[in-house]
Image (cartoon, rainbow, N blue to C red; front, side, top):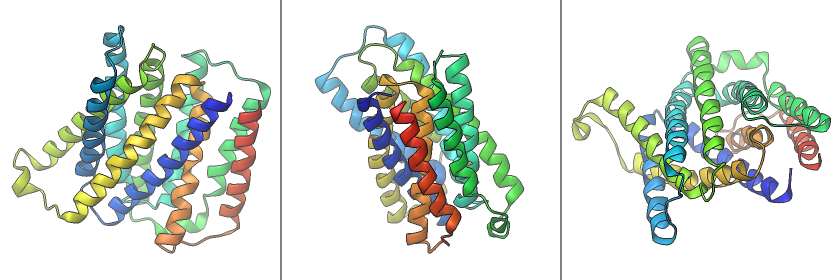
Length: 291
């Protein structure tokens, strides 16, 4: 992995971790997850749309890019909604480890067999070491902390499949010239559409009477939008310059960020496993970068 791709990936990992922490806040406060997703995709998409057409043009192969980006954005929008719903049933300390073993595994397999990623033995070792990180975060003592383990696990698997598939589509879209900002806009439009569809299904067309929103919902929605701009742009840029297998495996280490922030914000417990996971995480990222 070259240095530029690595820096973009690390930036995406940090922003992605902070973004997921605020998704946990939305879930913990029982806020409307579809509305939060609509704010995240819609506001960030509009902002980048204005910037794109003010300073850049439309890529020549825009039709193909639109197809892949729409598919990726729609899948991510649905997966994002299901993820927040899952966090209402199971704790993030259980959700994220499972999600970040299954998700990168799907992307690595897709990257190798569909997109033709070629990996070195050291990179395979780094990927295997990365899988140890989330496994260290799972403990049998977490069972009593879950509201509905069975329902939560079902949502974990479904959301992971959707978001992993979205990464593969997005990677394919970024393989074309000058596609990063265009992919960003199209993906956010698709994410907005899927979030809006979920919101309409939940509430019908009478938004003013059906949505019990307050300033806190708007505040969390705007935070999601700002973080969405940075996390999505940095990830798409990293995907445009590097192998999807390596980028996404490193990006998956963001699970440590909401866990650490939860210890500070929600006074979640800290133990030796979590400390060891941080150490192993640095080792795995080092193996993937230096290969």
